[in-house]
Amino acid sequence: MARPSAPSGSTFSVIGADVTIKGDVSASTELHVDGRIEGDIACDSLVQGEASVIEGAVSAETARLSGKISGSITARQLVVLKSARIEGDVHYDALTIEQGAQVEGRFAHRVPHQRASDRPAATPPASDDGEPRLTLAT
Image (cartoon, rainbow, N blue to C red; front, side, top):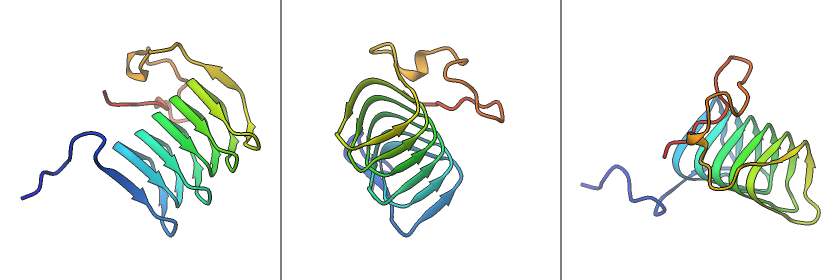
């Protein structure tokens, strides 16, 4: 019988182009999003396809964005590709932006080597329902 989860880095989850999710998404592995998500995303690593749409906050250790995002982004290592269209504030440790990418929001550099789980609960700001926007498992 196969193990329920493989070692970190050897598996990933895919949300296909024909899938729409209304609600928050949490993944302990790499997440590939080609569809539409209307909710917050928390994962170890996010890869977003060009045609995908995310309406909500994104928090990840690493993120490679190429679609549309309406919401805040918090990532240790962030790559914004030229096809990306972002509406929201961006919090990062390391940032790469391709020429042609569009970002409507503020950029804020985080303290290097500080994990999101090590920060006080008041940072980042709470969402409308009082819940923190960023929750990452170590």
